[in-house]
Length: 84
Length: 84
Length: 145
Length: 145
Image 1 (cartoon, helix red, strand yellow):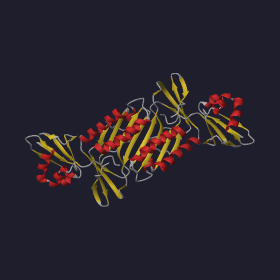
Image 2: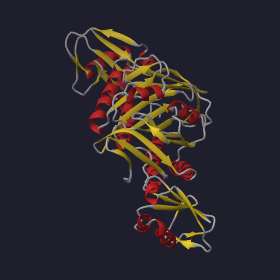
Image 3: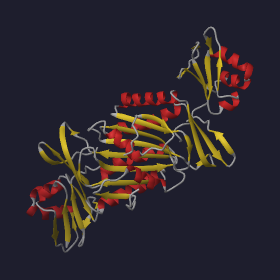
Image 4: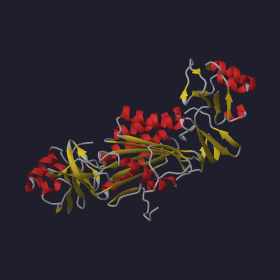
């Protein structure tokens, strides 16, 4: 099982804050976005267009990052901390 | 009458903190250092070698600054405010 | 001095005291000569819009980890003695403190450089988001730093 | 908040509160988004010598005038909203506050630049002198900034 987390503006796009997903083998980000597309096409589109950042276990992903059972995947819109 | 003020390390060189001097006509910095040389040759030498800064009425002097009756002249060693 | 424990990197709801944070950093060394501090506060105007309120959200654990990475890199790359970084989350009124970075060093040059780098790096790498409330409603701010 | 009146440029014997000085500057505008502060403190080491105490002296009136000139030029040249500068005189122990510069602005860039310029300019133009007490005795510090 993997956990998906949606932050800030992505919560309303995904329609949820968090969900769980069962995977049997490690999957790529592209494969993950195909799965997400079934429930939330807009979210999957943003992932493919790299409009959101994705972290796995609190580390930013690279193109070849594999998602494995037990991982926490987070969808992060562009950051705006620090005020100015 | 003009007032001469000596700051920080210059107090011990001049042997005083402040003194008064009567002048009839405006004098240059060079002329002032000739007068000072009579009592404090070391101080006069430092002025000529530009090892001290001189202000007149709280403004830094230029080479052609004239000192007039009523002025406050201050001898200022290199500044070391601000800590680091 | 409050009774707060001073972890050097924190994300918290409560306000902080700049004086207390500086005093905590001073205790690290007797050889500190320069302390540069950056404090971000809530501005009333943003792109011509009048803001009445701000609200910050973060990704717990990951945000703290990023701040700690920034702190360690600042010490390593700029040669400052230490650095603390505190970011508030939750509702923030205009004029209130949002983020504080304190860089302490032997000399001032490295503390200015480290502090300016750290706030830029925080905006670039730390998962914290801002929601602005204006007359038009609430919006998540999504511009890049 | 103490009852001190907040003149924006001061030379004083007493210590100051960084928080109070920042809060006083915040009152100037509701459009402040960034505040950069430089705090100079007493270091134990100077050119390999162990310092036990510092003592600062200034040229009254002229020093205040120079600080006010720095403040005005910082606002004019760097576009900060305001700036305050406080320098202590008299005896200073290791770790104690010596000088504080607070630059407030709409954005952070100008506040970093103005603050770093102001402390360099203060050292260059303001008639303030430091005496260090080491094991070898008391010496006036005469190096250029």
